[in-house]
Length: 230
Image (cartoon, rainbow, N blue to C red; front, side, top):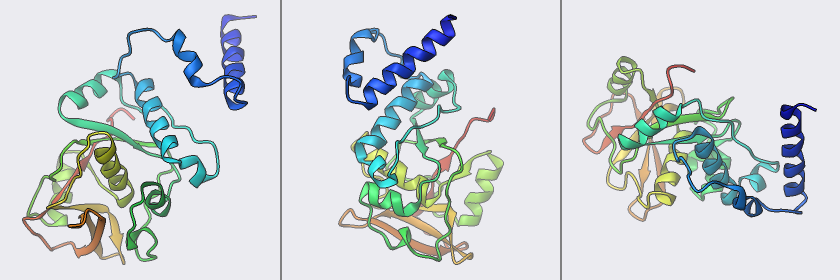
């Protein structure tokens, strides 16, 4: 038997024993080396997957949950974190309603039929800034879209933003956009307006619909970056 086949059989056996509660993942820690590279794509995937599972995503989805590896390389992950960004994932197929339930973000926008869905067909790994204040303040939605197009950046959707907010809250112990709001340029309302979101004074999740040509010094934008080699 080849080494590859032996490895595959061993991994299947271990997974089966974990699924049958014969062993736990904690039992495997004794085989882990002392050195862990936090910039490895597998480390990022495993941490994010466990984060979702601990929130109860398998109960909401009613199925076993896994994430695919991010397309970011180890060097890109390290560069992102050293520049003050995070890399996070919006799972494929998950809806705004399910995210609202998962993160306890009660908002009309989670179920409103006039809000455009942005459901990913693949696990969407993206990079965005670790910041409580958005950039591009006092600019219209159209102006920020033009900036993102020039800089090869993507925009936030309601779904992506909900994951960002909960990661900021749970991992970095910071609540973004308490004073300001963020344009969610990938989430339209009635095909003409665009959503903005942030935190209400009581720290509840807050979403509104604005027209593209509106602007305010209290509303800005947040970029999304994906690897250019996908």
